[in-house]
Amino acid sequence: MMSPTKPAPRTYNQTHVPRKFTSGQRRVSIYISWSYPAEANREINELDNRYSTMSEVRRVAWPKFESLAANPILFQQGIAGSLELFFRAWIPFQQFVEETTGLAVPVFQRIDHAGYHLPLDERVLEDVDTLMVFGLDHVVTRQKATSEEIEAVRRFLSREGTCLILGPHHDVGHSDDENIREMEHRHHGDALVPRQQSFGGYTQSLMQGLEIPIENRYGLRPARNKTTKEMVPLSIAHDLDKRGFFTGVTTFNYHMHMPHYALTTENTKSIHVLAKQPIDMSRPHPFTEAGNKEFNAFIWLPANGTRAGDVLMVDSTIFSTLFGADESLKRFWLNLVK
Image (cartoon, rainbow, N blue to C red):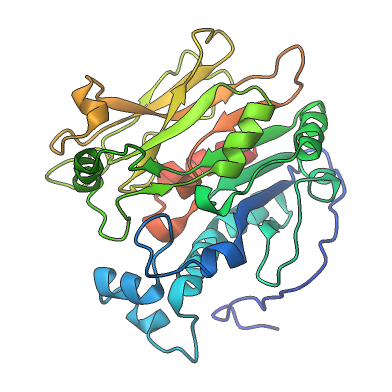
């Protein structure tokens, strides 16, 4: 019998075993839209549109990661080391879902460590009820959904009870004006984020193909209580929350640069902005200078005549314990998978 203090043994390079449908047990899968090699092999002398190296993370966050990452014999260095932090931080969410549903949560990559390409097709879609697509690919790596993938997702959403969760990350420094880029950088205040960092090319192309009129914009700093440092509660439209996504939920976790999910249509009858996050107004940003005090943090597109499944928009960092996970966030996870 394994000691409870020891982590479960990990496997890698295994073929996914499909999960059978069982009433009351929701099958959840994560699909990361990046090419791992394209991200890990980015030229580190390029300042923009890349992930930080592990050395940069260690220096900025010192000494938080020293016990984990200081030894190159035990932990990957360079950009690859930073990418591995994502996988480690998703483990608690995976464990939470498995404990809740009784089913493991597989993590698929569009192009994995070993260079295997897995498009979003029936191999991913046939044994899942809630599919989470994390838009963590830098736009410069040119990840795009093909017409075959878009059609496969349409078929997935034609099944009753399915749910597609899209989480394109931020788009920092979109402007060509360097002064605006600097304002955005000072607003979020994260030294690890370059002056320009655009994510989510794959999810953007998928949304266009599915005719979802939403764009991920900016990287906005959520407001926190100046004394307690706790998150300022979300502004929740409880009257629209017919599914109870926010029952018992007051806040998400804190992350310095969250995307605003902007609606690009005036026909919003079938689009419900269920949660908005107050912005840190002490730090100027073009979005707040235009009069905005909150950004769209969670959007629900209910099933309609042409789509039997729901579509949700929420940032992938909400499922990462790299930025903490309190009881409010765990209740949100529970509401999603139950």
